[in-house]
Image 1 (tube, rainbow, N blue to C red):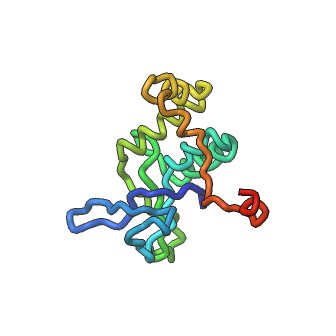
Image 2 (spheres, one colour):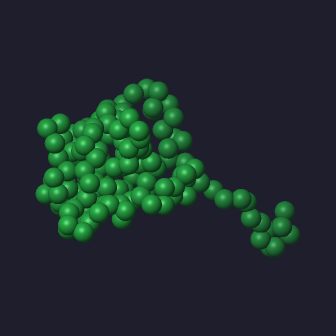
Image 3 (cartoon, rainbow, N blue to C red):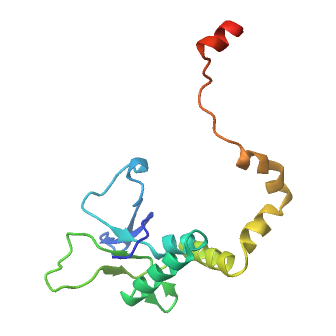
Length: 155
């Protein structure tokens, strides 16, 4: 099974035949977690990993391609491995045959970033509004202040 779980459409459809969209990947953040669905693999998740582990991401994209996860406009939205599907015939995942513009956009930007030495991040950080707030991006999260017994006596 390939890797790459994030919010995406799955094979479940509504009465009009529209794919349903769920926050796969971080169940703690989900308002409603469809227990009967998943895992659902989203190729855009792997594209986002290109800058972290390129060899593993490329292997994963090839695996998704081998499972027929690519159509005429690029990688499909997702591959649904939900256990409720009939796997008695040994079939693979159900391909969610749609493309979401924001997922395609994230994929294209990640690929451009990977191929051209972080060009997207450089462009983003060159903008004056971003530069004005960059210190916040570098700020370390600090927990509640703790004073030791020795420190309390010294104060």
